[in-house]
Amino acid sequence: MSDTMYIFAHIPKTGGTTIRKHFENNLSPYEFVHLAKASDQRIERRNQKELAKEMTDAPDLITPFAKRTKEERQQVRVVLGHQVNAETYKLFPNKTCKSIVFLREPVSWMVSSYNWKMNVRRQEEKDILDFDEWYRNVKKRRSQLVWLVKKYGGFKQFHHMSAERKLKTANDLLSKFDVVSLTERINTDCPIIFKKIGVPEEFESANVAGQRHAKILSPNDELREKLAKPLELDIKLYETWKAKMPVFNL
Image 1 (cartoon, rainbow, N blue to C red):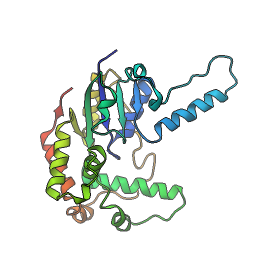
Image 2 (cartoon, rainbow, N blue to C red):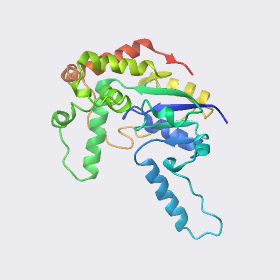
Image 3 (cartoon, one colour):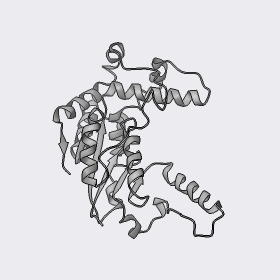
Image 4 (cartoon, helix red, strand yellow):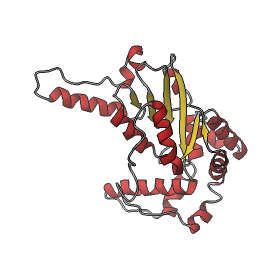
């Protein structure tokens, strides 16, 4: 059993679904943990279906992560999810933890968030909002920098921090990762990461706009100009780490 495990901080809309599905297809439920709100609920539903089957053999049940013993947690090789934070490594005191995160070009990220939310509204048979109307309601709480500092870093007073402190805090958090990559490098960097972990290097993209769900809006020059000021900190953060590529310490 390896003493090294890999923790992926999944910023929404940064390729996490693609990476998660690859691990689900190539690791056992005890080797890979999807650390997200709905994950253990899905396991419980799966177990109920197993118990409901008419079969003579014992049902194939999986212990939800929250209920696993220390010995079962020692089997974990990879953790990924929106609930990963700077303290997640403490769940595995006897492991050497390597942390990994992907960033996305900020305007592309915002457009992807909009497309995803509007597809949810469409499925719920609600009206599609134009981008400006949607963005007015989310701009203070939706960005990669917000997620990093507030959700991952646990800085609850985020909105009371100065712009300079927000950016410094985000950079400080990223500097502690063993791998910082970009979604546009996912096809070249993921095979390197997967090889180190010991899973197949080839993978299929998932949850791509225009394939699984409709692409309502695409990034354009007008949108980039409009978002240049609101996303100024995110753009600075992204450009800083893009200039440092590659950042690997596996």
